[in-house]
Amino acid sequence: MMPDIRNTNSTGQAMKRMAIGIAALAVLTGLLFLAAPDSFYLWAKAIHVLAVISWMAGMLYLPRLFVYHVDAEKGSVQSETFKVMERRLLRGIINPAMTLTWVFGLWLAWKGFAFQGGWLHAKIAAVLLMSGVHGYLAGAVRKFADDRNEKPARYWRIVNEIPTLLMIVIVILVVVKPF
Ligand code: HEM
Image (cartoon, rainbow, N blue to C red; front, side, top):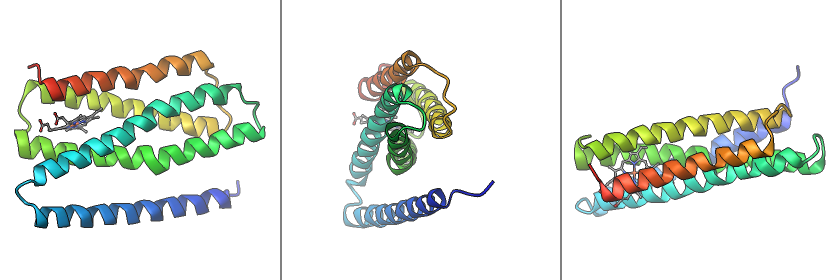
């Protein structure tokens, strides 16, 4: 089968943009560390929370797009538009935001808590589940792109609730630290 040249080009551009974004953030993080070593923990936490917000926005929006995509006729302009929206949301926002959340979250857990605490272990377990849901949704984007989705809108409505519930648990664990 011939490779889809448009897809290959857009993947190349997305990788380039992501590499530039990561390099810019690495430089910014280095500068912050040099300028304010004493408050760097708080800066890292701010970046962590910003990444979390972006990740969660995408994780809550993607299954909602699937709900509408199911109703679009296969091959229609609407269906093809949903495919582009889903691919861009996944590659441009959800994937990089998850990576940043993990990198800064693990650094905070090491620096601030030496990986100790029941709340932290429970939080990491819940984030692993969230990452599993992320992987599942990424697989669904590929299925929708190939017009192979068989699941009804109701199914995606229910899946939509899983990241919401996990997010509530994670935020309570890290803010209240109940155990
Ligand atoms: C990837 C694994 C993650 C690890 C290892 C991690 C770890 C941490 C640590 C150690 C802190 C600092 C807590 C403090 O200074 O009191 C923190 C802050 C925070 N994390 Fe995460 N985190 C992760 C992912 C997430 C996710 C997925 C969410 C939300 C869905 C989240 C939400 C937050 C929030 C809201 C704060 C600020 C809490 C505060 O300042 O009171 N984190 N995280």
